[in-house]
Length: 222
Image (tube, rainbow, N blue to C red; front, side, top):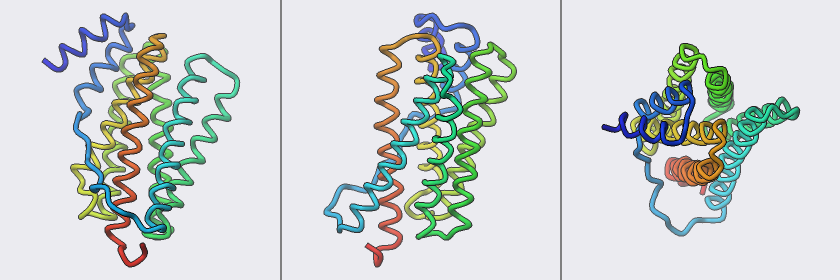
């Protein structure tokens, strides 16, 4: 029933065949549930600063992803510069983890996130070209990387970031980003805006989950 609903919605939006495949495959592999951040509470200045840092870093992640999607869809000449800025964001995120988990862990997270970005480009290219075989392979690789990120995060803080929750967060991030990309590539501007709003809401939830987990794991530092 879920797959059929996505097919009907995709057809109603006038999606081309490869984009219809993209929408259906994502619907099948992505979970709709979100992990919940720690209940709101009074934060110390250090804890509030960490939350603010994480919010800014992860919002930059989806903001520059959006710029890349727009540049790619329109064939704009600044695409390579937007991609470079987006990749730098992954370095910044990894660096934010280093004070708590060490340089090796931060570098590993950056490497995984850079792969996440590069594989998203593969998905966009396959969808735009209408190559269904490459599209299916790109999606499979993208979700495999998302699971690898989820497992790695959970290994750093298993009590506060259980692997099931981190997997759901990453899958939802990919699903919402794909919705945004499909809307942009098909010229559905209203859906494009709505999708981005959802992307921002979800990534801020994810950022708060991560910062809250660090605060809970290292209470003496906050």
